[in-house]
Length: 255
Image (cartoon, rainbow, N blue to C red; front, side, top):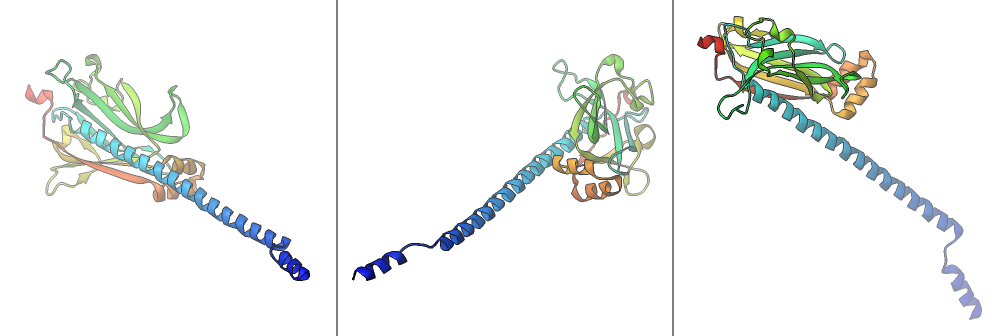
């Protein structure tokens, strides 16, 4: 009887090999769970950044569309000018420049709204000190609302360069395109160049902005020129808005 109890006691535990095997399996399971958690966290972070970038992209085109809808368009002088392919971003991707005269959203004295010269274009991203941060491209907004600096009704080439404050509207831009629709004979078709003085009153405009998420932009900046444009084309997200004009003429048309 004593011998039987001794044998039963010895069989009640685990051998060293069994403990090591169980520990190894447990470690493998923990590593797998940790890898899944890490990948899920990374995917959530990328998705969250893409969602933020998406919200920013939609906000940018909505902002431009809102300001363009306030444009005061005249046919006696250039108060709305669209210039295609004015800057180059990643590889050989081209971006447009849009300049126009618009009324302020809020009245300056409770009754009258001020006129502003506005220009939207793509340039290399500046830092807070005004110097260029290379690489990277930003959508810029330039405004001149001072009465003495309003040259649109004096200089037909005012849109080329006018004095005003420039701010970054959005970073990681790949392209900025505007398509203007106006009556040029037959059905209106999108035009890549437009001048209100020569082309008449527009019907509508399509605004298209394409941008990268911050993570994709960092990767694109590290690629060679040969691979950069292909990567940008595969990962950039586009946002579009359409503006319908009320055919409000400029001040000179009322004189």
